[in-house]
Amino acid sequence: MKIKYGKNLKFKGIPVIFNKKGAEINIGDDVTVKSSFLSNLVGLYSRTIIVTRAAGAKIVIGNNVGISGATIYARKGIYIGDNTCVGGNCKILDNDFHPIEAESRNKLLADVKGGDSDLVPTKEIHIGKDCFIGCNTLILKGTVLGDGCVVGAGAVVAGKFEDGSVIAGNPAKVIRKIK
Image (cartoon, rainbow, N blue to C red; front, side):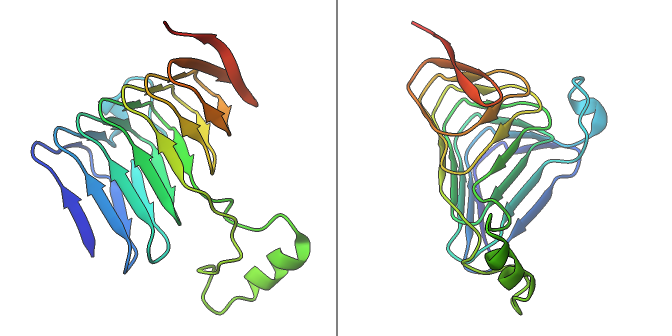
């Protein structure tokens, strides 16, 4: 299994990290991963979960990143830039877990590979450097956050957002720009 990590990786609590054969997880220098209830006083609902679910999937976490009770689940690719904070209970999911169409869902249910199928819609996620992602957010497949973006608590984010955007709501939209 290819899990690479840099110097000064800190765990507060025990995360769940699973890397599918043929996939890759790269964690940069000076990364802090919080997974215990009191490690972040916003109140974490679960341990941090970092998972690659398909061969060829990649999770790349930059330097000086903080993650608190988040789920980062990749079937294709999730990239998080340097100096980014991922708030408590955030979910970053590059796939839908199942097809939208009933016929495809039924085919997936019968899949002998147990859901390792290409039937699951997937698109890479790119989160820029110097971003802040508020607690209880959901970052959906195909999302691109430019450098310096701020995502408000509880936002459901899908789409492409320019550098310095402040994003909030469900569905999330730009509510202002940081100069």
